[in-house]
Structures are given as structure tokens and as C-alpha cells.
Amino acid sequence: MRFGSTLAWSAPNADAASFANPAYAALLERDCTLLVPENEMKWEYQSSAENVYDWSRADAMIAYAQSRGMEMRGHVMLWYITERFPAWVRNYDFGSDPRATAERLVRTHVQNVARHFGDRVKSWDVLNEAVDPPTGNVRENVLSRAVGNDPSLMDLAFRTAREELPGAELVYNDYMDWGSTRHREGVLALLRGFRDRNVPVDTLGIQSHIGFYSSGTAQQIADAQIPGMRAWLDQVTGLGYKLMITELDVSDQNRSGTIAQRDADVAIYGRAWMDLLFSYPQLRDVLVWGMNDKYSWLQFTQPRADGLPLRPCPYDANAMPKPLYDAIEAAFRATSVRT
Image 1 (cartoon, rainbow, N blue to C red):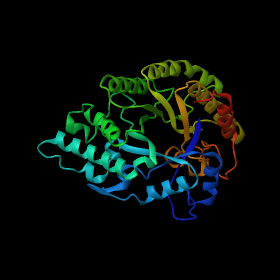
Image 2: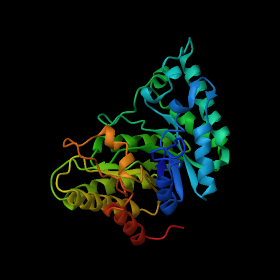
Image 3: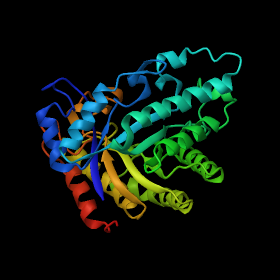
């Protein structure tokens, strides 16, 4: 099994979760064999106009990874939310044949990305968050509406990626967790559809942004949720999909107590999640969405009501390992060897 993390681009020595920040790079180099850019490969960040890209930051990140003997994952070719498309796509004139236009945009973008990065990236999140959590339906967006909201653009993205990158792992990535039944069922239906239509999807990326949304001890909450999640994972793997943990963090936004108590709860909850996922031999790669609490995206998107910093990552803001770090290490040691 392999362990990795997201990282960012920054100017040299900036106070950021970047390979150019020596303190953060030290954490990556201590623990990781696999990296993934937080934003720098996303369409909205790369492309300012049709067929116009700035690859410089992503290329610098890959060069860093290669220089340290680490592999870089690709994230993401098609984030299936209108707000996550470049501005020029959101405002595009789809003309008299919107289907043909949308297909051209998707096909060309996947080709551009695949041809630029080539075999430097061996695993890609081809499609991200296509299922609407409250309904379980496939999301509508500016591209999907051009094809009557059928699944053809999603299929096209994967088929184009396979044509361009025949040896790469192609991943559907989403954030359903063990508490979101309708979201999970929507993802399962999407995966069944891919399999029925012979769409080349290899792996389900389980983001694993987990947190506390009910009362009880951390272990009690996990124990109550594990059976439903296991039944669902059995169905996913029964369809022939591999699994990957792509964006793990454990939010203590809704957890009270001292820092030591919160850290202990996060470790117990995270270990239960990992033990469940690790029990499937179809899982090999595990990535956290940040090594250091200081830079976690949760600090500004889901702050605590009491104003205290969240503690969702393996290391604290001073780059000291926490109980979650120990839980991850213990989960790796306890699981079976992957071949």
C-alpha cells in the first residue's frame, strides 16, 4: 500500500502547504510516496480561454515529485459542477448544435490534459462529484444541459482518457461517506451505469472527508455506521471496481472537549474508517487532504463555532504528529499486504 497527500504550489519559502515551503516539504518527504495537486491541475485553474492553458505550476509540482522519487496523481479532468468550470466554459455559446459543441469541449480538454502530462501521471481523477448529494441524481450543469442531461459526456471523458492514456488508472472521485445514504446510492447507480455501458472506469475514489454529525463516543458513532457502509462497499467491489482513499481528513468541527479529547476522538473515528476501507484488498492507495492542520481547507470553509482551529490532519499546526498520525500508521501496520 502507498500513502500520500495533497500539496499546493507557492513561491519559494511561502507559508503554504507547498513543496516550496521547506517545513511542509519535509513532512511530504518523510511520509509520502504519492502526491496530488490541490488545485493546480483543475480546468478552472489551468485554462483562461479555449485551448489556452498554463501548465507551469503543475509541471513544477511534478518535477518536484519526480526529483524525490514520488509519484503524482492527476486531479481532476472534469469536475462536474458548473461553478468548477472555467469562466469561458460557463459563458460559452453552444450554438445551434449544443450536443456537438459540448462533446467537442470535453473531448478536446481531456485530450489536451492527457497529451501534456502523458505518462508522468499514471492515475487520474477523470470525473469528480457528478452526483447531487441530497437527491442522489446526476448533477445538472452548463455542459450536461447541452446534451439533455444524459450521461454521454461523462462516458466520453473516460473513453477519451482511455484512448489517450491506455495504461493509466481512471478514477471516478466523490465525497460520499458513511452517513450519506442517498449520496452513496446515487454513486452506486452511476457506477452500475458505467459498467453496463462498458465505460472504462477502473477505480472509485472515496474522498473520505469524514466528521462527527451525531452524539455518542467516537467508537459508538463509527460502529453504528460501519454496517451500512460495508454493505455498500460490497456492492461497489462486486461490480469489479478498485478503491482508493483520495482526500482523507477527519473534521472535529462539531466535537467538544479539550484538544486532547478532540484529537483522541479524531484518531478513533479515523482508525475505524481506515480499518473498514483497508479490509478490502481492492484498496491500495491512501491520500490525506493535507498533512498539517494549519493549511487545511476546512479551517476557512467549515470553521468551528467557538473559533478554535480545527485539527483534521495527521500533523498539528507546529508540524508535530498527532494521534491521527499514529492511527494511520497503526492501520497500515495492521492490514494485509497488497500485491
